[in-house]
Length: 264
Image (tube, rainbow, N blue to C red; front, top):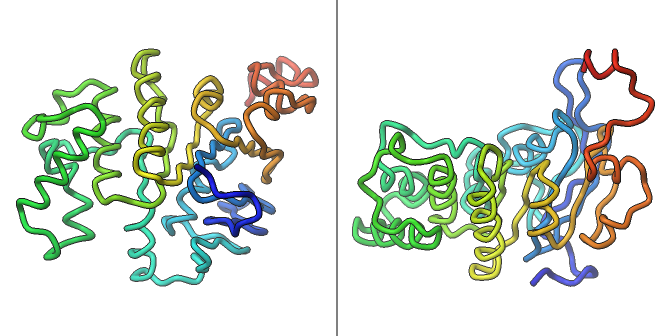
């Protein structure tokens, strides 16, 4: 269950600015994430949803502002300090990001080798790999090659790799992109099931509003370099803000001409 609203947030973005050359991604990002919740971040393509996740774990650096995790300032951390954060915060990348030259078992154990080298015996490592694959419904496939997996299986193996390190926070970057409805439902079920079973905090980036309404405790929408709104699922559905309702329903703003759409 999420922490109550008056408890300090586990993660906080405050006044964060990020730009790539002349393109401003965030001009003033403010967002708090509570311990134990599933927060979904939605918004149009290119608004910086994935950038937010990468700034949290130091893969990208904020130009200005504050990002804190468990009360510690991430923006001021050196690489060795960020390595500690990355042991506590795992990320499932959009593609699954599996290494085709490694077996499934080697892929799932990759984070263990990186973060717990010389701290786990081979048997302990193999047990953890089997445990993670079992949690995502893929027991016994350690010797398979990634090339032999379906898209849905690759996503689940990527998720097994993320949870193998037993993180406190899981970041999901477009976890259902490219999946059929059955595998989308399976991944959504895994997100909520893992959050409850492992008592972790989940941050999900997606443009799939059906999934967002299924899995979320709260939803935040990114718009024009800021968080436009953050609220419960019911409140988000009931919003009278046309920018939110247009996004939910997949409607282009009325002011956009055909030329605007074709040039976007």
